[in-house]
Length: 551
Image (cartoon, rainbow, N blue to C red; front, side, top):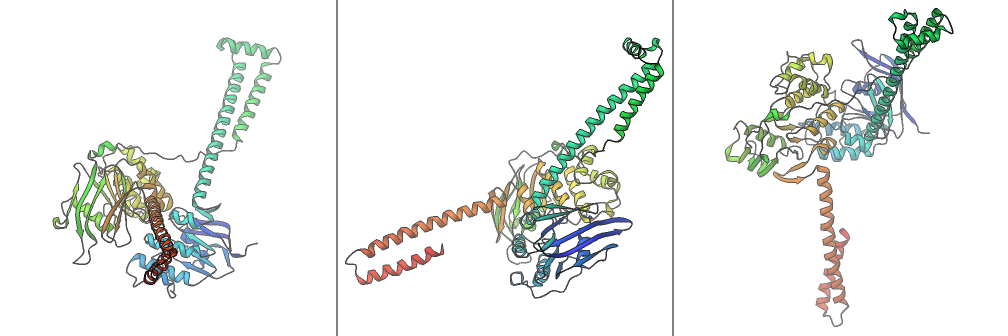
């Protein structure tokens, strides 16, 4: 039996009278690789803090039977850092990515039996995420909070879901968890349909018996022929009062059966919000954005963009991919500035097709009015009807009373969701999105992904969330060392194409080497070969053989 490393019992934690956590039992065994998921505000960070001993629960206790390392969210109090692991050495702590790498170094360097990690992928680029997954693959036991579905899929064997303070355990990785959730929703739907069907059947029987009881009691003049015949038939066997009471009792028995039916709640159905995209007056050009010979640098520094040219197809979703500091945001800013004719003409030209209206997602939220409500903010500048905007907000998880909340009291994730609602409701027909999933929880990411997948306009986006970008991208623009290259497909498809291309190239090189080695072998076997030529061929032979071994 696996060794238990941590056990929590009867945990309860409340803030402001609201119960955040109510968990009867939680156990972590040696070898467990757990992903902890839930909406923002569901208590994930609070739970990790309690398990790590940084926060006391209102009720319950935590027992730790091994050494534990706790990797906090960026922005929390910094734990003592040990010497960074070689792969994670950094020159400084200026960027969010560098700070994240340093924190990961400290946590992994402790070699604890149990690692508690809160959003370790935040601010990491593609290389950083790959390196993190490599390091975490070597960690035997961990409890991990992450909004990166690719990380949860690759690393986790269990998913713990926190919802309304309750912890539910699922076997398997994130994809398995989603499948189980969908199967559970389908079962609930089937149970709800059976419940409503049985309830309607019993209600019909109850109403019929009530009518029969009333028919027995009514004078014959007020009856229909059928009801009079029924009364005469029953009266021939028993008195009217007795018959009426018997039918009434039978009706009440049916009513009791209705009242005692196990109530099945209707599962929440997927929301839809079909808005009228024609109201945005989309461009008819095949190419929405075109750049020619674009170069850019800051204050005479190295070129971030070096004479790049590109095309963004109308109606397609294009991912702009590159490592941190490669110039992705710079290029998005240049495109956004082109709408206002602000780009430096000396650095090249960006042309927007006639009719293009840019919607640019940025994370400083200056386009929200703090004193106005969620609905009022979403309606400001909207070309869609209010009914459609309400549906958009519902799909982005704003429902009921939340529509009346002032924007000033919203959390960071809520403000981002509201910003997207404004974009979808506006007259924008080309969206520029820079890391749109940052600070969003998993339900919000999935809601945004669903809406962008259905979006009829043009999208150019930057994202390090592999699951999100692979689901959306139809085209890829790779920015590397100041140069841009285009590929039709997403990043995973591009990597597969690159591997295949490399494999073909390697195969061709191998065949060429083998043919030359065979040719040299044949010549060495020939009689009368001059010593100097033999020496030259032998030297070439051993050189080619060494190259062949390296392939």
